[in-house]
Length: 526
View (tube, rainbow, N blue to C red):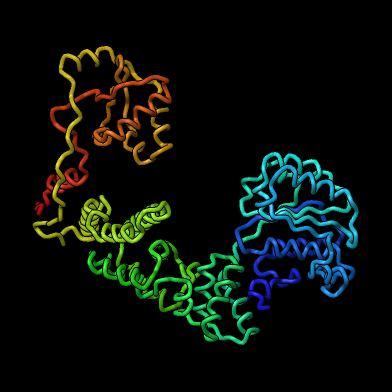
């Protein structure tokens, strides 16, 4: 009967375990020095070797002729464990045996001495699935087990384990396996199976598996079922991925604001049965690669892709601002979350693509960035050679947006009465700190502001109008009232402490232009 690759090539000794030297070396030394613990806890993501190391450890502590801490694989005990005839090694799935009665039965069995082996070993997989009662039933036995018993607990979600359980075990953390190590192992397996695999294809499989050797071998098994020559294109086809050209084309359309072109590419991928959620995730990875290229000195050391793909991605990254890349990742992640909650995936992908191609996706500070860049250029020219400036300096200024509707102003008599009775709010900074819990950006808008309490009102005063722009939004007013209630314990209405006839201006551009004119430099605003 055919055995799948991840079972056929499962490591039999610690030296065969890929990418976990911090675990294997320690376990080998403990066995060599006869210092094995009575309870172990193996944690880490899926497919990183937890169960494999558990089985190797179970054989090693019982092997009749261990070799440098590894099981020999030839003695009666090793062969009996492999074929299942040795009943002293018990592997328990806690996902389906998670009740108190299951653990009580285990405790009763643990009292009996081993029938054939030196130790009775219990491997409890997915131990975080045990109920609270089961954990309590296991606790005493785990702390002081019989001398002939060893427990090995394995889990992918260690944070769900009680601290009392973890404190009674030796903990070993299994890391995600490096893509290069996975690619090397896949190449080795293909050589043994008489297949050929491209290096880029092996790295792509490693990237898809996200550090899990088992997932890598499972995908390789699928690819080998189609061809003995495994290419990157075959891997993408088998895994249901979009080809790299499509991802690059979608990004080019986003750069060109070509929404129609993006929709056409998505339509072609949908008709070829590509999953839209996976496409969305691939785009997230592509934009992440551009983000790392824009921010790291040596992004090639982190990114797993071919040289040609890296060059093309770098070219796109140089044409896009970092703020736009981050905004795109945020939009795509939101779309992916919605896809996972049952919305129409194709429509969601198309909506997100149109949003990314629209001008509204650009940063709200783009106009400000252009003006700052122009100002920096003028300052640099002045420092280098003031006489080099022409008689007229032209600076692009974006058209001002229509002002937001003002907060409804109370009558003059009521306003005067509120101000007379107002007293400083001593807990205002605590309110701002509470706002930070849900939005640091909103809280930053209230920095430098003060507040007063007058009857049922909290009156806000600030040297700038940013906080009042925020308070014009009903949702933000509700959040502010909730924060005030959490801090003070009572509900208040919101208002402004003062309503100036003319809005305050903190326009740094206007101030700079005034300084230029005062210095005798004529400035023309287009």
